[in-house]
Length: 209
Image (cartoon, one colour):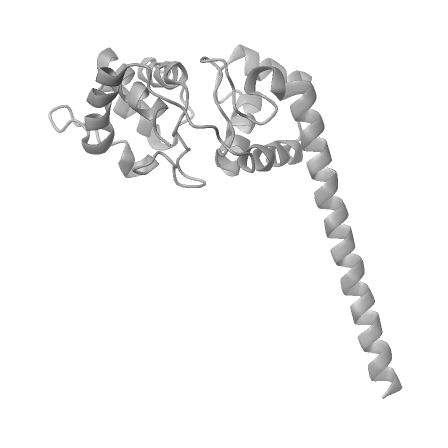
């Protein structure tokens, strides 16, 4: 009986210690992420990930895994952007830092956007929801969801993203200047889109909630 009680007490103490260690590690990761956001990320993306600069993406609510992958791609040179590559290098981000930043921005609340050009957005809605069968452009919602919320791990959140940023990324895919899409998926799609289609889709996405 005494051995059983001693074992139970030891088990409880061990469980408590492990839980406490996990909490401490989580808090440490959160603190590190907040420090990095304040010193490295906030100037362009905002402290809460709601960038106000049209050429800088909103990160609030974005999939944690997607953010981590983009940071890793910048560091590895798989995604080319002199500013981001320089920041990732100068900040000396570790894989753990990148994961922590992904979790941090994912936990932030995205602020709703609004389409500036309603007519352009209406044209973009047709492509977003139904694609363009004539040119083989698939519906954007088939991968990014009807509300632009994305599919965690696989496809990023688009809702309320700056129209200017969306258009730039589509154009970069079309020109092959961005090439870190799995299976050439976005490069293939963007190559079939006209400039006007890209701008209309971007306008519609900016107003999605």
